[in-house]
Length: 417
Length: 95
Image: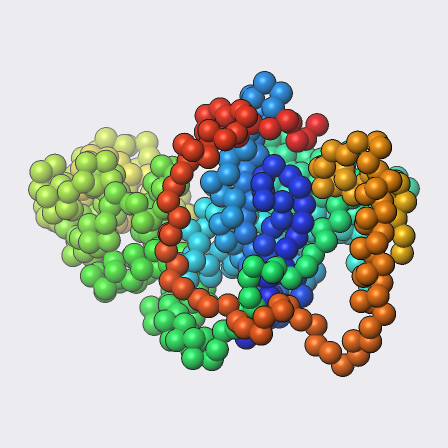
């Protein structure tokens, strides 16, 4: 992790633009508040790549300019102007759009875990500019870079970079030359456009801000903050693997968001089954949250409700299939799993007699499939069992204990062979 | 270093200051006399001297992060020549 600087200095960056009416931006240049460091990311092949951080500085945000629908004028929203932000500047250590997105996700996980940013990219709480260059294979020096702006999701980071890489390669292969410039990414057209302005190049005339004294942070202050730090995503991920036996993938997904990781630990505490809890959270819960565009913080199903549901699967009160139905009812109407199971009569059928009756009925009805089963090679029969399973579950409205059905079904069918 | 007419016109443009044609010579002269002073400062040897971030030998006092300014949205919007949907309208800033 990058280290805090003991002393940092604010400067004025002078420019005249309606998004910052006082004519300069308070920022840091020579002595930023956070010095060099690094962030480790995992690449697709499971390797770790170290991305160096050049520095991070504090500066004030500018207003938001809206250029549409104001009868040829621009509308300026100044609510954001003057609010502080942290800009984190990396070294050119990422080698693909995927690595860039992985880096951004890692930063996102850290700042949301620290609680210093809500991480909402669509609303601009977290923004990123991507600098992109290409070079021939084997060449050491980096090519001329362009800076991409207006990228407001992780998916667009990948798409914008891929698009810009393709543009630069085409340009060079056609004998052209990349110009160092800022380009705007247009997600609708999936293209980057030069933000060429008729303005002459700005001379920012940086100088130390006379209104603000240098900021000096002493060790006591840094130690106090360090003592308050929550468990960071990498540490939590490692603990999820060691303590709960989660897969690398599940641990990575769950630890990337503090609220989600908290939710997982709450559910697991109540179910004592980390894997099943992880499956439900990364599966059904994530699916419905995505559909409704909600974060786990605003999940209509609480950790207690989900744990109650998982516990009814664990004690064989309901099947996994029925559990999905119960979960959707919890999502839409609320209620505990016990209440819903009782009210809708969804209890799993564990009664051997009832299960045997259903199986006999299916075998009697599906004569053609039964004959195919008998005619099949013994090692092919396992696969064919699925059809009969489906029929029995349909007949019992999904309530039959699937483990029991499978056992009895196989027994009965094999007896016919 | 000495400024000529076109330098002054460029500086005026960057600062968004309208100046009359006949004022340019006066501005050029004034700015050049300031630059003479700067030249004098720059001729001083600063070897071994730490750059100064602020003339006062003090550090910034920190305070609790809480809102201290009242919201004066209505008054502030009333100052603007054109306002719509809470936004300040300005001449279009991109082509």
